[in-house]
Length: 471
Image: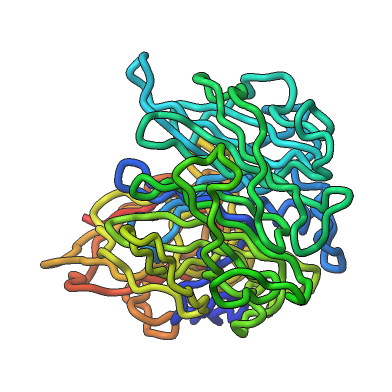
C-alpha cells in the first residue's frame, strides 16, 4: 500500500471550529434545542453555487431547499440533508431564512412549524413531528403574501421570526423594504402578528415594530417573560440618532424588547450586539443571526463569507458560524458578540463506541456528501486520493480494540482508509482495507486510549463511507 499524498484542499483549518460545516455553503441560520441536541437550519447557498458554477454570483433565486445539521458538542456537526421545498411546497418560488417553533400537542407528539421566506414576496409554512421531518405543506399557498389586507404598504414581507410565550401564544414577525413616505432612518416595514391556535393561520391585526434603520433578518425570542426582537440594520450612515444608547454601526444586528408585542409603542430599542462580519475581519456581507440557549449557555449563530476565501469563488456564498454570547436574563442586556474563525471548544467529548454517521465532521478536505435526503443516513464520498475528514475530542477511555466501518456498495475495491490520530500529518495508526463486504471489521494492533482527534484518510476517489464505530 502506497504512502498517501494528503490533500491540502481544506477550507476550514483543523485548528478552527468556524464555520460549522467545512464543505457546504449555507446561511441565514436558525437554531433550536431539542432533546439535548442543537439543530440548525439555513438557506441552501450551495444549491445556487452548484447551479451557477465557479463564476456565478449568489443571486438566491435558484434556492429551493433548506439545510439541516446538528450537534451536541458544538464542534462536530452532523449534516442531515436538505428540506426539499420545491417538492414539498411546489407553490413556493424560493426558500430562504427559516424560523422554527415547536410544542407538544393533544396527540402526544411534538409538532414543529417551519416558516420561510418565499422570495421577498411572503412567508410559507411547513409542519413535521420530528426536527428531521418528514416535512409537509399544510397549506397550498403562502401564509403571508405581498399586498394582503393589513400589509399592503410593506414592500417585502419576508425573513420571518417566530416564538411561543409562556402562555402558549405564538407570534410571527417579518418585513423588508421602505414603506412609501418613510425614510431609511425609520423604514416602517416591520410587522408582528399573533398566530392562530393551529400556528398556520393569523389571529390578530398586523402591528408595526418601529425599528431604527431596519433592513431585514427579523427574529424573535422569548426570554424571562419578555419578547426580544432582533434585526439587521441597513448600510446607511446614522445621520439621525435619537436613542439613549450607543449609535449602531452599519449593517449590524440590533435588538428591541417588549412585554406586550402587539402594542407598537411598547417596543424599546436596546442597541446592537453584533457588528457586520467585515468590521470583525471576516469579510463584508449581509447579516443574519440566531440567538439560542443550549446547556445553560447562550450562543449566537451568524453567517460569513470565510468558507469561500480558499475556494474557487468570490460570488457571495455564505457559511454558518457560531460563538458564545452573553445575555443577562434579568435586565435583558445582550453584550456585544465577537465573531471568529477560531470558534468554540467542545462542551463534551465524542463517544467513539456509539455508531456515528460519516456526515458527522469537524473539518475535511475534498469530501462531499454522497446523499442529501433528509431523514435518511447521509454518506460521504472521497473526491480524490488523500481526501480526509476529521472529528474532535473523542474519548477512547481505557481502550478501543476494533473499528467497524459501513461502506456503500459502490465504493471502489483495492483501496484503504487510514486512521490517524490528533493530526492529519501523523503516521497512520492503522489501515483498513476496503473489501467487497459492506461491513468491515478490523482489529487494532494496539488499543487507542484516552482523548484524541480522529482522522479518516481515503486512498482513492469514489470511496463512500456511511458510518463508523469502535469497539
